[in-house]
Every structure is written in C-alpha cells, then in structure tokens.
Image 1: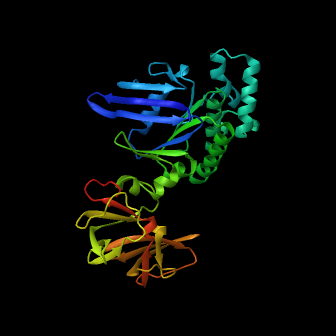
Image 2: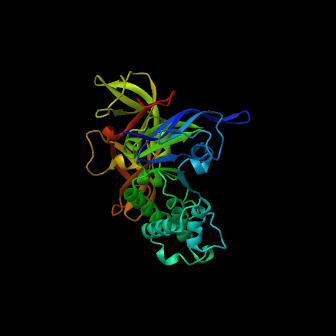
Image 3: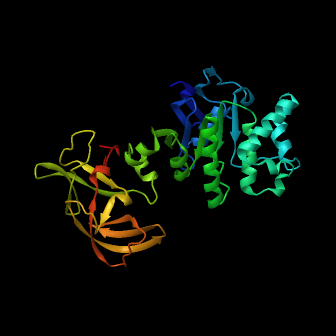
Length: 361
C-alpha cells in the first residue's frame, strides 16, 4: 500500500522542552487515521507540524512522496479544519468557500464547480447566501469543512472539529464526516480526545501520551488487545476493570491470584510464558463480565454496590475480592444495591499486564 503522509524521525522542541521526539509514522493513501490522546499529549502539535504551522526541530515530513518539511502550508496540498470555525463573519457562506480559491487565482467557472460539488456533498446548498451569524454550530462546521473541501487536495487535516458542538450534533456530524471519507476516499488525519469519535471514524488509531505513540492499530485490535496499561485504561467507557495481583500455579496451569481469590487463566492467549510469582494486572472490560446468567466454569461471589440504569444498558458497580468493578449488562436486568450475585470472566477477552513495565503479557 502506498504512503500518503510519511513522518520520519520527527522532533519538536519548545525551548528546552521536547514535545515530540524521534516520531515515525506512515499514513496510507486514502486512510482515515485518528490521533487520540488527552490534552497535552502532542496530537495537535503533530498535526500542526504536518500542516506546516509549526517548524520542526528535526526530522522530515513527506506528503505524496514530496518532502514538505520546510514548505509553506499553502504549498503542501492539504486542507485543514479547525476546532473554531474561523469563518469570515461579513461574508456569505458562498464567499467564505470561494475566498481562498480567488486569492489563489482559480478561474471563476472552476470555483463555481467546486462550490457546487462541496455544497452538495455537505448538504449546504440552501445556506450559500447566509452569513455565519445566521447558521447553527453544526452548519458553521459544515461550511468550515466545505472550505477545506473546495481546495481539492489529497490530504485533509481535522483538529478536534466537533469539540464545540453539543452531543447530538457531534453524533450527526461524525456520521457526515465518515460518509465524506467514504465518498472521497482521500487521506484524512483527525485529532480528537474523544474515544467514541476515534473508534467510530478511524481505519487506524494512534494513541499518544507525552509525545509518544503508545499503539497504532485498527480500532478492534486496540479495544480488545491493548498493548499496555495506558491504552487499556484510556479506551473504553467505563474504563477496563483492573485487578492487581500475581501469577500463581493452579492444577499445574498458570492462574491469577488477588486478595486470596484465584482465577484460572484458561482461554487467555499469552504473548510469553506466564511464570508464577510475577506481579501482574488483570484487565477485564465491563461487558466481558457475566453475572448470574451464562456463567463460565469458574464462578465467584460479588455484591452490587451501585446500579446505573442507562436505557439499553445497565451499569453495575460490584464489590468483589476487595475491588470495585463495573459490569455492563442488558438494560432489562435490574439489581438493587446489596444484592449478592455470581460472576465469571471471559478470559479469552481479558488482558494481562506486567505490573512493572505495564506491557501486555
């Protein structure tokens, strides 16, 4: 597969502070890559380096095989959509879309053609004569996307474009952006701190922490096989349950022990031999814990602490083996606080991490 954007040994320093250090990343042609992480992890900084809005300290950036490390943003063949809409308030939607093209000397017939195409894709034909003040937040963001779209470029960069919108609008525009990518098949690099956006939009997700990519994989792999404890805890809402304990031997097989309770590890696919005595962390997602129904061969006791009805789902917080655990069950099943119940883990979907290195075992 050909590379659309290639980042080689990229470093960026602000004074004596290293924000990005020797970062390497290959983004495939037509791929939707999401840069995901909490505030300050370096995701927007990396996007701004690709866009040419920040000068890198070391390394190289290639777009479509061309070294653009020191090129101006306008010469990189990119379109960018920001968190703030950054529309000209005195101009109509149509003029906002055409302004950059006119400055670049694009002929008027071509401008009209591109605006017609972008407005049709984004369903903003009826808004072309309005000014930004007469638009809703979702409509303004559509116009901002349209302004990038009319540039007719190979690579689109999105910097948290939905952060300023309410939950319903975010959900609607998320679908629009996914549909946009499917229809255009352009390379898109999308920055967000919202894991739902990342999981629903991405072909691959790069999870970042302190300027370092912790894992780069497709959403399913990242969710089910996180590479380390940070990734496991960052992805998923509510977060993965973590039980601290050690590896032991039970009936001649590896097992996990915590607070006097032992769990068989049958079904877990380890990346290396599981030797007794090692301090580890067992991770189990809330939906991979079974309670009172369809239990596995190994059953343990727990008590309901809190119940959170969420419509289609019901979230239980349980007291078990000295830990507080979250369990996601069908919304029709109800349990009052204090109710004793039985639970079992699906070890085939569990994760096991070394307590010291925090890497997956």
